[in-house]
Length: 205
Image 1 (cartoon, one colour):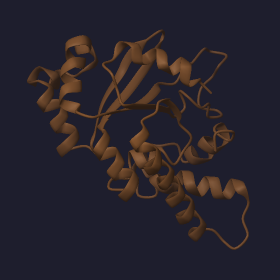
Image 2 (cartoon, rainbow, N blue to C red; image 1 turned 180 degrees about the vertical axis):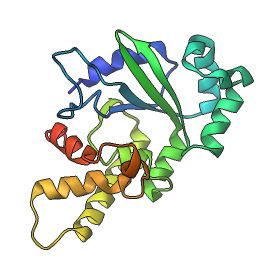
Image 3 (cartoon, rainbow, N blue to C red; image 1 turned 30 degrees about the vertical axis):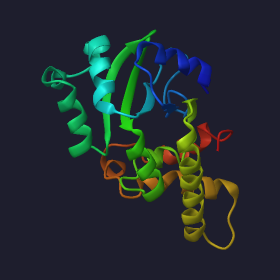
């Protein structure tokens, strides 16, 4: 597992964020996903929560224009608008080089994140937070929604399990909640993705 302190170094190239967490195989090793003998490194995935995405993107475009696609040529309003009207409230920049590794980061408004945690509006960030994450920057107003989101996931998992089950079954069911309606699991994603998450993140779970 990559430490939160190590992940914090990534934030040095960005404007201030209210909250940040790392997730996925770049933070928690997933068995069989990449070869350490070959020095392979999976992409480092991060989510940033910010109060005002429009202002944040304006500052980030000025500092890191190369992170963005041609969409940035239309200004920060266009970038923020994509997240609001097309995505699940999150705008991603990907394939960003950093110290010999590639980084993907998503930017979401704190209020949208809080709503997803409370109501599972898109179950995107909320689903990420059902699984182990490395909290790099913690934000007080989100702590209770994060806790309640996990409690809801545990409750749903318990309803779906038989009368007798073990801890691995419970954790697997929690981790797979956000993938249940994800079409990528049928075509693009590794069919054993959830099992690999559980195996690689056992201590965090």
